[in-house]
Image 1: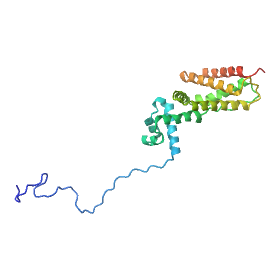
Image 2 (image 1 turned 60 degrees about the vertical axis):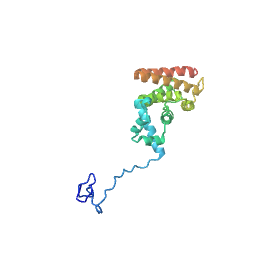
Image 3 (image 1 turned 45 degrees about the vertical axis):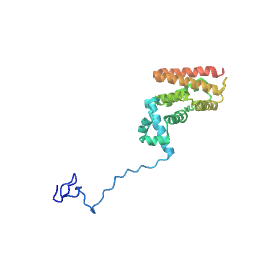
Image 4 (image 1 turned 90 degrees about the vertical axis):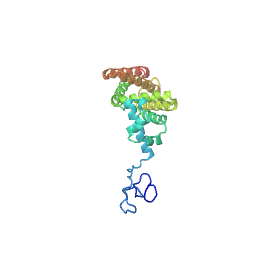
Length: 235
């Protein structure tokens, strides 16, 4: 009991009415401002979307479709997951954009080689070899990614997109063949294009499973001869 007859408050030193905090009431010293977050430059939605789709494509080509999670794509793009989800709310929406990227943006444009003076089989063989060197051997991972997203599109029912892609490929090849229209073909050029696409897809799958450049060159030449035997009328 203190001399005043009052019991000191718990936690206080007798004779003191406050706890020392290290701060002086009424002090006019400077007050530290809270740290400010760095400013993030504005990126338009179209640019951000393109950035994310290209990052997803790189992940698919390097690691496969199964590893292309939203988190993996966000890390690849160097952005926060929440930023990615603001553009693509689901993985399905993102992969749909990747289908568009790999199937339509990256169409196979055959190199316009040769002249109508060449036999059709010779022209087709040179064109297939040039396409193979430019597109397939230069980036086999990209073609593997294309095959994966093609199967994904089949599995998820994106049949309209696939039909448009096949039509675009066929029309592209048919247009190149028709440009050299002095050849006498026994079947329509769109059927020629369909045969060429089927053979290329099969040879691509074989090459990815067992890469052999020499064998692939021979197979391409034989494929051109086989298509010419069906398509070109006898001289």
